Image (cartoon, rainbow, N blue to C red; front, top):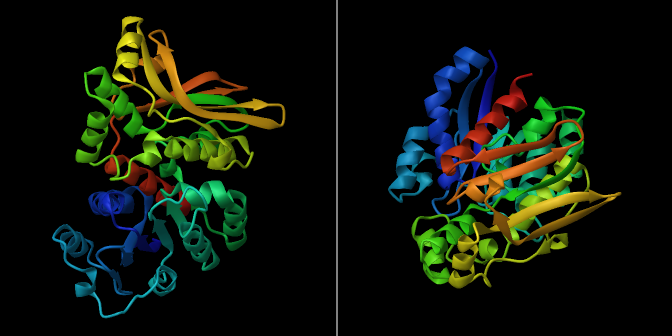
Length: 341
């Protein structure tokens, strides 16, 4: 029965949710998939790092981080850099969950590249490497006989990339449209209930889905990089987030939202892309959605994407109220798919 050594680079909400999920699913992974695992390293930005080739106590690591204590309490191996951590972990699988850089994909790109060079499978929720170096990383993974998988980069754990990779082969994606940013959708939903824009943003910050600086969401950058990832991977046309026609939701007022509801319409930040010959028209912008559209009823933090292909016509995927646990599941699914063959 194969045994896999795992390393966590990034141990925030998603990384900790993944650790908890692995603990919960350990018996099932062994009995159903003949997969056993141990953790050889955890690296964080705030709580330090640890490496232990004999296996890290995941329970203990979770307790230390929850209580604000440093992970160094569980190791005597000094770790000074993220690349050094990857080397010293000697892992078979790296879970790369550091913060996304929309402009360059760094330093996550170097993390992924280094792990693949060392012969590690890489599972990531970071969109940066996907949009800035997808073909390079896929080619590198293939040359090393490992996998580079990224299901959790768009719509958390919903099977978007694996849908086209496995469930509907020989299909050509012609266009897609949907809501891919949970924060802006919740802001607009709150404004429908009477909040001002700033009040809605503060609520998202208070519940932990918006950053202290919410510009990545409200100005459409998170949505744009998700559009770029879908186009790059599913349409086979490299696209950077800077190349997406982008408008955020700052100009949407409570009056506009109220007037739209009177007409049985709703404002949504819509992500879309369609083929135009050999080119792509990609856009992120607020749109008025009529009540006859499936997108109309998607509220709060839920998401939806409608795919138009050459074989199935229109196909929609809806994700209701995602969170770190759903993103963690996407990473777990990637792990299983990376090693199952």
